[in-house]
Structure formats: C-alpha cells, structure tokens
Length: 113
Image 1 (cartoon, rainbow, N blue to C red):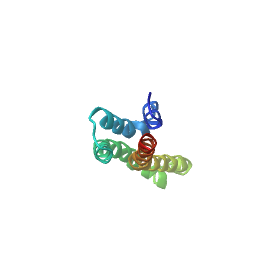
Image 2 (image 1 turned 30 degrees about the vertical axis):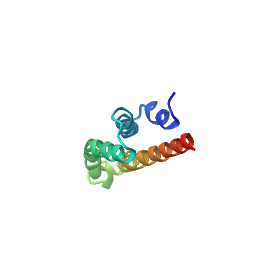
Image 3 (image 1 turned 180 degrees about the vertical axis):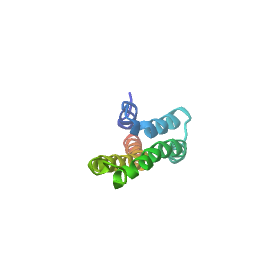
Image 4 (image 1 turned 120 degrees about the horizontal axis):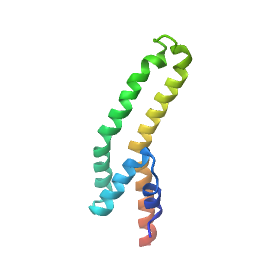
C-alpha cells in the first residue's frame, strides 16, 4: 500500500510530476535520506526543465512584446504561455519537492507516534 505522498507523485502523468517521480524513486529504490533525495532530484531535473522552458520563453518574447507583424493580436497568448511556463518551473522545481517533504514528514510522524 502506498502512502498519500506516493499516490500524489506516482499516479500523475503530467510533466510537472517528473521531479516528484524522480524524488520518489531516489528515496525508495536507493534508500536516500529525504534531503539528499530532494537535492539530487533537483540537480537531475534542473537543466532539462530550464532548457526546454527557456527556449520557448525566448522564442515567444518578440511575439509577447509585439515586435513582429500581427503580434498585437497574438501578444496576449504569448504572455500567457510565458507566464504558464514560468509558473510551471516554480511548481516543478520548488513546490513539488516542498510538498513531498511535508507529506513525507507527516507520514513518518504518524507512523512513529
């Protein structure tokens, strides 16, 4: 039976959960301590996440500013894409590991006491 944290991070197929899955695998398979697993998962996911999102953000910047012809009509869409990518990066690299640590500590507290 999986804990709530395991279900939260292993039953999701969204790209945002990749860091959580990496963290869960390191923690369970390699028996790493929580903090070390969070740091290693962050290290492994930082470059791919930033590279893929930064290419799209940089490609959308001229459209968002309205520098290209017809860009005034598509600028709101480009701004929404940029905002979504920035927020998803924060969720992937900061929020998911933090929530995992909170759930994991709570489940350990419930088991021990």
